[in-house]
Length: 402
Image 1: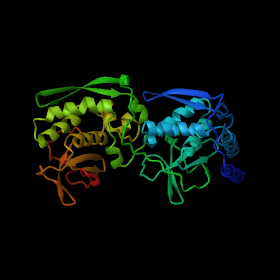
Image 2 (image 1 turned 45 degrees about the horizontal axis):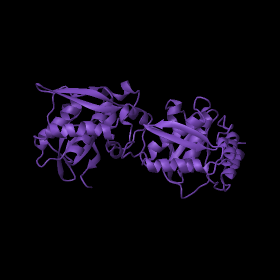
Image 3 (image 1 turned 180 degrees about the vertical axis):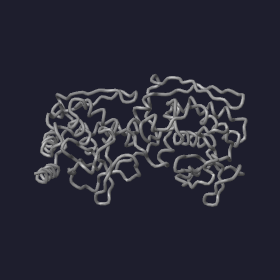
Image 4 (image 1 turned 135 degrees about the vertical axis):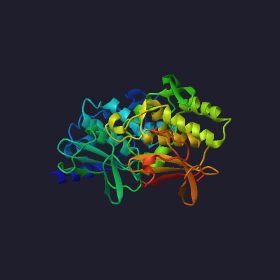
């Protein structure tokens, strides 16, 4: 029966749907705040369909049949126009889609229909998607060509599909016990893959920032900074997965946070040579925040972006390494490598002359700069004693301009 239902669904998807005009005389307006930007979208009232109450293939086919007969094209055009105007990359754009789906069909009202709206809007926005169903679960997948580590995926025709709503099931689905049936749109070579890379953050409303006092001590000197931070960063990255180190280490700060921190740090190190300045940034990252492993703070692996590390009271070695990398890159733009041990992550920086026992990578000498607090006060060039004979991997190498 499910095979026949899947065929029915594919036949429905293969129907060519004409683009309708924007002239909607009785359009429904949905409005919400999107990270400080007011959003208003006009929707055909018929776009709010009543089907899609379960993950059954027949119900999903019925949902698609009904929604494809509505004047849905203007909704897609408006969403893509907002994406372009706000310069949204794929992950923030997906958050926009989630907001729209929530307004049209609240998640608490019917989870399956809410998920189908997200799927439909992403699919019609040009992304290659897929659905998988079991007796009581509806998994929404999207094609992604990047390395994603803590959410499930599968391969189809040499393409990787990543589950976008895995967190809705408590980040646990027993794929050994539960049998899933794939329901996919018709193959279309023009559909694009989804990227988790974030190279710019939304322009958050300045009024939503709060000042945070950050203090730390070096020897007998105490330093205090006031940094502007925005709790909406936590919302943006709430379900963000573990990505590769290159993507993770290049997530920037938002404009307000950047302007409240980077000029202050630049001024603080302006009279120092590069090694002394990097040492100051290392100790700032090491001592301005308390330490806590992800297992205690989040219940599992979660890599914080530099701004999240500033926002949370506690962080682990991955998080501090990312923040320290960002600060050195912005203030000195020096070559760096990221060293991953089995239980630790740290940074090594390339100076004109190495300090201590250097790490040699591709013929260049780098000095370890440990941004995570240890039992002893490590200086530049000093590694954690317990790791001196441990193997590591260079998981990311940064060279300015390369």
